[in-house]
Image: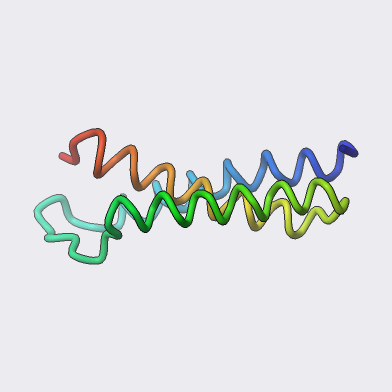
Length: 88
């Protein structure tokens, strides 16, 4: 793995978590978040993101590694905040 692609994957994970946190901060606490995905959707999206991230690293494609990392980061954050932890 080259440094540029590894950094892109890591920054993708960070960007996904930050994107989720910004979105959460924009929603009033009392809001019914019916948009939230089912746990299986989060699992599938995390898996797809991890696969894309791995393919990006394998192919030396920083864009693909970043996108896969961001997808994984968003869904891991959503799962942790709404399925494991408690909101509010």
